[in-house]
Length: 408
Image (cartoon, rainbow, N blue to C red; front, side, top):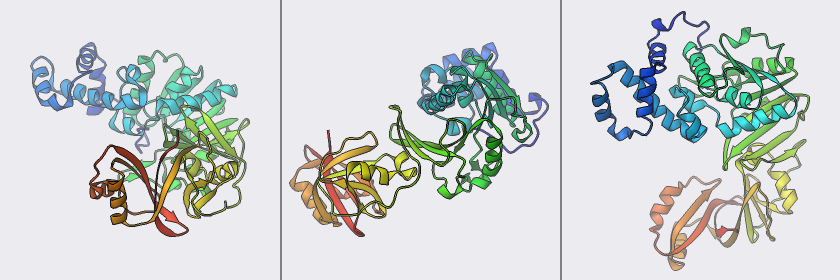
């Protein structure tokens, strides 16, 4: 979410140009401007700005155009119906939880009887809104005054103001004891981009974990790439993908969650793969007729060995998350392919084979290869009605090309 490292909020929006601009957007005039700009083309923004400044203050026009751009970007995460009623900040759009993921998390808490949540580091309020829609009362806390105002405006805009209380405060000073659960979404970006060290989060993961362990139940949103050794034994660790893309990891604490377990969940289907502890290293062997690409959440959760055991297959290389078998296997956790060719890595041989088979559409996948897919496609000079998938990988340590097509 959109958080800054201010320790105390400023006293008045009059002292802050960004807050003053946001306040202007919430006036009737600002609302009319935003409605007019809903479907505007950013390519025509200069002409649009010139036209609007004839009848509206220049500062308001600039703020409305900026907010219109953010709303258009937010549609991918929030959907058009909500995005065009909500308000955003640039970092808020970038870091907000996708609605489908936030709703999934809220549903897990609601199913356990949670009726109140302290949402710490709430940002623009995406998670608080999902919790409220699940019937949960929320205290949403952020220490940046503008961000808190945006969160409050979003709760009101979506008719959830009665369930969401927004407070501008330092999250470390909040008493969470009255709440059934705590949700913490630490800031994972700094002035130089993403933060990979969990102790460099704001607040640090150690503080968030301590806060979680004091609550009856808790959820901590963390980066999907968190080292497994940074996850304590008290947490159930879950990696969530949506539409095949890994979106986040969550550490769950308290009654109803499986401490020490790793979990991979695939949205929108909701399929969940769980293992209480890592399995022994899976077998490695020759490439069979079929190849399976595990979902990214499964890989992040270190559950590939579980899938290998389920399908009776093997890995193509001990360091590569491609599974192979001699019989077809169907699972929501993998994408399956039938392999027709296995070649040592050689661009000329691949080009000749694709030309011979008149392949005009080539999907390139890679693991353990430095070759960029776009560069490979450019060099192949594809032409023809056929299609194929090529995997650039290692087999028993050797650079290899596997060619095939999707199952089903």
